[in-house]
Length: 407
Image: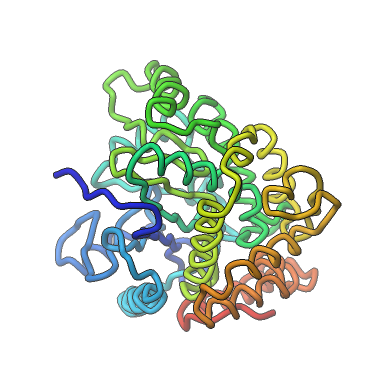
C-alpha cells in the first residue's frame, strides 16, 4: 500500500535507540530478542504498542522505540516514550537488566562484545558485516534519535533539504552525548559522529561527506546520490539484497519511498523528555529557515564547506567558534561568535512557539552544556571504571525517571 503523502511539518516521525545492559555492572546484554519475545508471546522484530512501536536494530543489545507512524502531535511523545521505557525496564528487572541512554557505551569493547541480530533481516546484517566488519564502535556503539520530516513534492523537498543541510553541521553542539569509548575520553564531544564519518570507508559513496550534496529534486537525487551508491555496492551485493534507501548513510537521507527526509546525526540524550525538547527546537528552527530564510543562499553552500563546520563541531561541541558567511544564513554578522550564541539567537527567534517545559530544557543545555560536557564535568578527571560506572548509573536513573542529568 502506498503511504499517505504529507505537506511540510504536517507530521513528524521520531525514533529513539537504547542499550540493554546489566543493571549492576552496565555490561552490554545482547538479548533484545528476549524482550520482544516476552512482550509479544513469540519472537518478532516489530511490536505495535499503541502510540509507540518497538523493534530490533543491527546489533542484539539495542532496541529502537519509534512513533507508530507519523504523528501530528509530537508534544505528547515525551510521556508516550517514557511509558514504554518504564514497561521495558519492568520486563528487564527480574533478570537484573535495564535500559541505558546516551549515544555510546563508555566501557564496551565492540571487538569482543558485539553480537549481530540473528533473526529477521539477518541476511542483510550479515552482508553489512561481511563488507564493513560491524564489530567497531561506528556500528555497534552508536545510539541516536532520528527525526523524519515529510515533503509533498519536489518544491517542498527543495526547501526542506536546503534547510536541513544548513542546520546539520551545528546540531552536535546541542546534542553530543558520546565523549567516552572504552573508558577513555576520546577528545571528541561527539565520538559517535567521528566514527560515523568513516564507518563505510570501504565504499565512500554511501556516506559521502555526511552532509548531503546540493541536490534539490528527486531526479537529481537519483542521479547524483542513488546511482553512484548502486554502482559502488554492486560488486559486494550481487543478489541485490541491500536497498538504496538504507545504503544511503548521509547525516540526512531522502526517503522517496515515503516522501520524507530523515535526520540521523542526533545523539540520544539522557531521557525522552530531553530528546523531545530537542526535536521540538529543531522542528521550529527548520520551519523558520524554510518559511523565512533565504533559499538561494542556503542552496549555495557545498557539502565540503558545510563539512568543515561539522568537523569542528563534533570535536569541540559548544566550545566551537564560528565566523564568516555561514553566520549570515542565520541573520548574524560575520564576526567571530561562539556556537552557543548562535543557538541562543535561534532560540530567541522560535522559543515563543515552543512549550514552556521544552524552552526550559533547551535553556538548561545552552547554559550547562551538551550532555557530553556534563558527563565529563561529572567525572571530575577520574576516569576509573568505578567512577565511570557511577556516573552512568546516574544516567540510567535519569532514563528510568525521565529527568535531566545535572552534574
